[in-house]
Image (cartoon, rainbow, N blue to C red):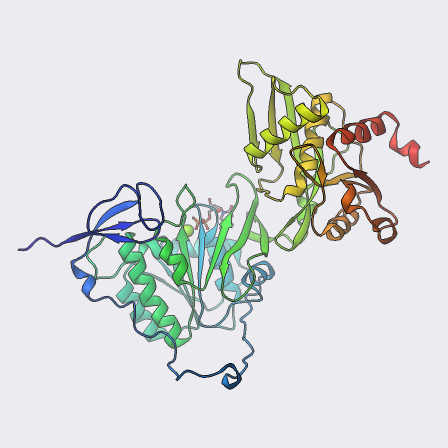
Length: 464
Ligand code: TYD
Ligand code: MG
């Protein structure tokens, strides 16, 4: 018997090569080529026409169509999708194992009572699913469940049941007989997705595919998967914390700026409608090293608590460690403090933590980070009611940030009374927010003075 031929595929982007390559010429990643059988690839079903074929026409001749949306009854999920699911679309829900993808998909499926739904699991037994369903949902609904890892069997189920929406948990566990490659291989994932996509587009069925992400952050499976589907949602968060963030990484039907926040509890995932309330813990006694920053993620402003601990290094090399914040940015801010404000932090250990397990990339929290570090280093608490929103530049300049009004509104809503910000952001704010006290700053060294000369006088005396 002739040995079947093999081809090498890039695990990252799906590029093919006849021989193994150390570096993918297409996406530039190292060490991503894997060997897979290629003999059965003749029956390649990708290609062909997925969309209704009509002759070319001008824009005038194309009728406008209101995009209908199916609401999932989960306000966070709907918002991240751009207003609900678009019928016939294929949505990929990616995330690290254990983050809560199956739970989210199950909750969405059980909530969408007015649609015929089919939930296919290749990962958990129907028994396990039932147990989880009874934890998360009050009423079971009429969603259909099946175990399968075979694409052909799934397509049979679809022909029999003709559901309006299908959940596949997960795309990495299903495979087709028409390929020799093993389950979870690049060619299997690509082929199965292509066949499901064809079904979705020809029958107008909505698909929610679950995909695992490897530790290094790529969808286990080729990047081509991301190109094939309409929407890629990422479910992230620190598994040891309660909070989970849902973001759209790609969305053909909406913006990628939106994010949804959930908390994982004993009854599954709960939408967090007021993140500030949960992320900023009310402290009765005022602790040093805690600063509140006003951040915007996606379109939503919320407050976060930055915690810093500065202590003398016990070992020779001082440690710098961050949770939820970029450690290189922390090093940069420490260098700025050292050089511009004369704080000797070079021999100190500095630990920084964003409370709640969220990752924040908004540069507007720089000033809050700096304030928390100074507060810990001097061991003086930041006066109550203070909030920070500004970027810090390399020369120690305090830089303005976008959408300052929204940040102020959020701070006001949460009962904060003073905002430290960039001078350049300050114009005309006093009239718009009469109850907020603004402390405009030009340079980082001014922060030290503004914060800690204030704390020497009792702030309650100041208002009296
Ligand atoms: P799961 O949805 O299985 O994650 P994934 O599909 O992304 O691998 O959920 C993982 C974790 O969520 C699991 O460790 C247990 C936890 N969990 C709760 O804390 N409460 C709940 O009600 C449920 C259903 C799960
Ligand atoms: Mg799962």
